[in-house]
Length: 424
Image (cartoon, rainbow, N blue to C red; front, side, top):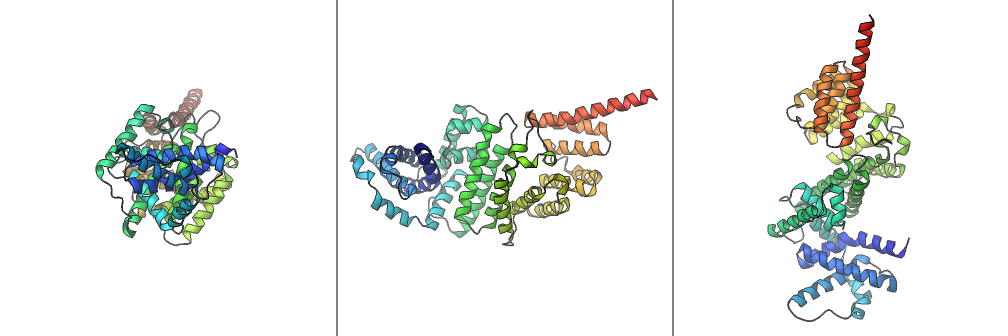
C-alpha cells in the first residue's frame, strides 16, 4: 500500500469517531467538519514525516479540537494557534484521549452523529446525502454523481439539510438506553436506504452508484463493531453482503437485467456470501428474530442454492409469511407471491396479488409480476396490458428493456399462433 493510500484509509476509518467527538465539542456540523478537514490536512503533512500515530482517531480529534478552538479565538480576536512543533508531538495527549474513548463513549458519539444525519424532519434523500457527506466523507461531486443530479443541486440539498438540523436544535447529550435503541433503529434504516440507492440502478449507472452499496456495508460493519451482540445489526450487515455479492451477475453484456434464477452463480462473490452466511447463522442463534434477520435468511437460502432449481421456495414462502407479520406491507406480500408461484403455481400467486392493485397502482414490480403470472396462465392479452403499464412505471432503462423482452415474446407467440391458424 502506498503512503498516500494508508493515510487515506486511516483517515476514512477514523472519520465517524473523530467527527462524532468534534460534533460533541463544537455542537455545530459545519464547525466540526471544518475542524476535521484541518486535522486531515495536518495529518497529510505530519504522518509521512513522523510515522502513523498510535490511534489515528485520537490524533485527529486532538488536532481538530485545537484547530476549532483556534478558529473561535480568531473570530474573537484572541490568541493565535500554537506553533506547529507544539502539536506535532502528540504522544501524551493522544494516549489520554484514546484512554477516555472507551466503547460506550465511542458508541454514543457515532450514534449521535448518525442520528443527527437521519433527523425525522429531513426527507430521506437529504438524510442519505448529509450522512454520506458528514459521516462517510464522500465529496459533493461523488454524491451528486451517485444520485444523478448536478453538483450545485446536491450542494444546495446538503446545505438545506444542515440548516434544518441546526434550526431543529437537536440535543447533544449522551442518549439513554431507550433513546439509544430508538436511534439504532433509525440509523439502521438510513444505512439500508443508502444501500438501496446504490442497488436500484441500471448497468450504465452501476459504476457510479456502486460506492453507495460499499459505503452502506462499511457503515453496517461499523454499527456491528459498536453493537456486537445485536442480532438485527448482524441481520442488516448479512443482508447487504448477500445482496451485493450478486452484483457482478445482475446485468448481461448488453446491460440487460438478469433475473436471480438466471444469473451465473459462479460470478457471485464467495467471500461476501461466506461472511453473510456466518452472520445470518450467528444472528438466528440469538432467537430474537427481526425484519432484517428474516430478509437476510431469505437471501441466504438463495445464496446456498448451487443452482436455481435447488432453491427452497417452501422455506422462503414461510419466511415471507413471518415478515408479513412483522412488517405488514403490500410489497412484502408481492415478494411472497413470487415464492407462492413456485410452490403452488401462478394462479394462487395471482389471487394473492390481485387485492394489492389499488395500493400498488404506481409500482413497477406489481405490474411486471402480474404480467408474468398472466403470461404463464396463457392470458396473453391481459399480460400485454400489465406489461405496458409496467414499462410506463419503470424506474430505469434496464427495467423497461426487461419488460419489452416479455412483450416481444408475446408478439412472437401471437404471430406463430396466427400463422398456424392460417395454415389450417
